[in-house]
Image 1 (cartoon, helix red, strand yellow):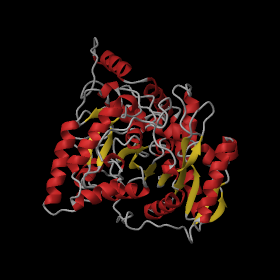
Image 2 (tube, helix red, strand yellow):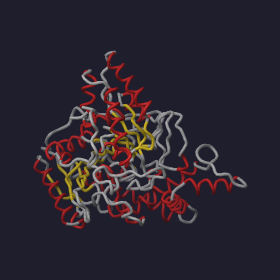
Image 3 (cartoon, helix red, strand yellow):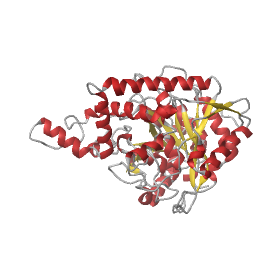
Image 4 (cartoon, helix red, strand yellow):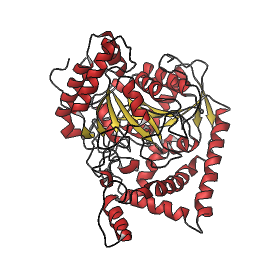
Length: 496
């Protein structure tokens, strides 16, 4: 197996055993990035010098007797996370030339664990999108079919891991932005409980929803990354002060005694025969692993989309007010300060960001606040209560991660059809629950010539990350869907 194809766990074991050096891993990955990046477009910036310096430090630490849980593991950092000295753009022209003066806590914890930062990954602007088509700084393509999107908003991180340009990708998930690109790119995408991983150094979109998590090729790798990132951070008032249960050492290979809920409202027959059969098979595979399937209801699930697209834009409107051309980022001069504000924001923000700012500002405005924003918060509470009632009957919930495989560029040109892509992921985000997508099979899209991956979404009660990752590992270990097809990219010579 080539170096670039090894899992994060394999790389760490070999680097810690000194049968492989972090410098060799880094050189192999950077050479592969050079070979495929022109086709895939995963990165906004490739950090050649920073990566090699970090790899050298890892090798020195291992030589001095340290054992690092992620020694030498190549890392793609989503470009809304600060990494000191690097261009950090959030996929927006307004921050195109801004360099981070500090490092996000989650990023630093992965670096401390031995990761090597390969680059800053492309994304939908300010994490607003489901396809990575909203980036102002480049196009990212799906490594399994370059005519299709990688999903969003963490599309660059997902594409980098799928194309072997990194072993771990850092993503942020507000309404599905880790889980959906994972489903589209044949990866594991894990959103922990809200507050489990610090948001310090993450450029905010919707502060009550944003959560950092990993995109990886295996569940074990996701667990290793989570174990390294999770924990209380005094720099983030929303991070949870609660003991972290290690997950990577407790992964199961069966589901005996686990009750898994199948949601009545998530009827997959509406998604077409191929997709319906795929999810029906996934549910039966869970049963074959020893799980008991139980029917559950989420009566308010259909309100998730409307609720989210009031709360998230309202918070976006507030958070993005800071980008005004005065303190940092892009500035377009005007005759006075008001004209400078208008010109800067008009030139710096893309259409989707402007749309959500307008929606959010309207929802928060006098005379509409109670009618829209307050009612959305009440609906959010009802959605969380429905999950509590459901988990009284089951341990985990299984449902689709996305309603279709990756679609072609420009296939969803109207906002509503794009927003519908998050139908299955938004309710979990509103409730703050841990959820992940794990590969569950392949379907050939209409008009497509090759199969594309799909993801099974598993959801657990608050703080049950260990149980969630264990179930996903058992399913992955039995089905091995991820290894059925490979990305159609040119192979890199050498690097073995």
